[in-house]
Image 1 (tube, rainbow, N blue to C red):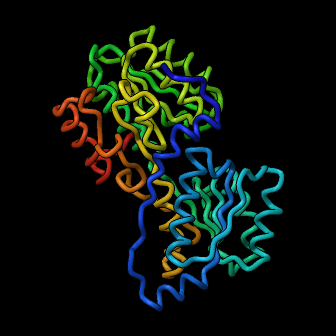
Image 2: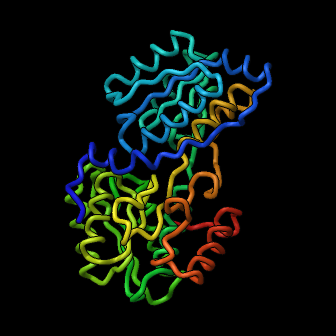
Image 3: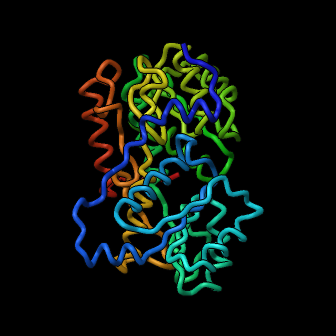
Length: 336
């Protein structure tokens, strides 16, 4: 039986799952010297112990620190104080400032021209056709990841009737992820119905459980979420309804071991490491949007394995792997 879910409980549930990828163990003296001269600040929308979006990015920052970079961070930065915090780090001579939420896209576009010798990276899409030459953006293959989850959900559905998606904040990315999930499920297994609910909330377990329970009542026997605490409520609903769940953002096997088929882990720690290294080795892509493939941006995990063999058949996994490889290579491009 699962306990009530809160942000604090969410952090406890997943704290043990934040695997920290190790950077290259041996650095040359020149590389180490370059790292020591690179000061990196990470600005987070949530707590470093939130067990998801902020925690994973912070893990990447800690790995950069181990590799010799000078680092600092500010957590739970209110939107009203973003400009003050950004300018504070820039005025203090930080080489790279990473803004880890959607709002930093437009904020950096306005502020970066005042600091031409500072690099800025926003963990979001490029907001327009043009952007300052010292700002880089990223598209973390959200649509490809959601499509892959929809395909896998359809492949592991026992009844073959319906599968469901539970989203968080009501924004264009979440809506597109829902459409990609539904499209993939229905294309991968003709006859199955893809369902989806964007709850409008990332921090409401009750809403997530209600959404999942409703879809289960309408025949869904696999639930995937992309909704933080709300998503944990969806997994709670899946476990209570005795159907399969697929986790998101971190390895959520321990949330409901008997129900979780696998999790789609977003490699935000890797992203932060890559950006830090790009500044040190002069490969930062200012003015552009970085497009890592789904195989770089996401990992499918279940503890020490990739999937729960009690819930995912070998044939379903083999079929999923073909779709995953097509998405990663670009041979398959979801149109949502």
